Amino acid sequence: MQLLEAIDVHADGLKRAALEAGPTAPVRNCPKWTVHDLVSHIAFVHGFAVGLALNRPARPTPPPDWDDVLGWWDGQRLALREALGGNPETAAFSPYPGFAETVGDWTRRMAHETAIHRLDAESALADVPETRFSPGFANDGVDEYLTYLTPRRGITPDVRVTTPERSWAFGEPKAELDGAADDVYRALWGRPHQASVTGDLAPLAAP
Image (cartoon, rainbow, N blue to C red; front, side):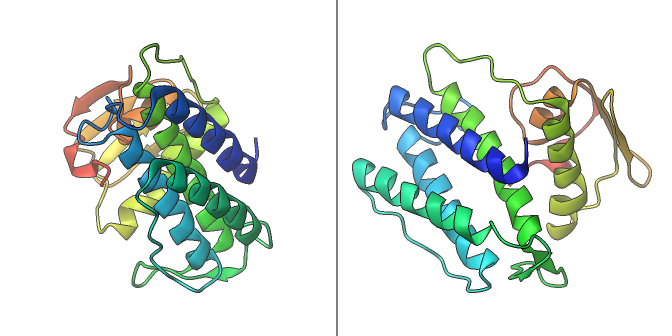
């Protein structure tokens, strides 16, 4: 699955689960959020990424009403698809001082942001589906977390991460994480998983 397609697939999955759960349902993966909060967040993120990809940064404000935010998000998804559909090497705006970004960087970032929040929306359902990510997609998400996000957050990973397909090691590892790519991906994002963890992953915790 290509990353641009992944945004569509996981946004569709997120919306499907959100509609089934309803706006007031609690999100088990994010205890402080309701489904309405989750949808407002992903709608904002997609709208924000449109401005970054077009080199015209702005902070959009999703409407507060449930039906309105769903419709607004649909519009942002279309705008995001268009903004990310060009040359992935095109320079884009970076909110991280000292780091250059491209349209391809934001495509990757949005694919994984949307996939993780799809899991959150599904965690609000009474019967949580057994969604699993392919090794290729999950390994890409692990790499994106370790080599893209952590440096931009000013964090030195100090971790060794191993999946059946790939491995990453940074500095003198103070923690080790290994397992199926899908579980390692979830573990880095602080979502339920079955990976093996040795040491403390807290310094790497997702914001």
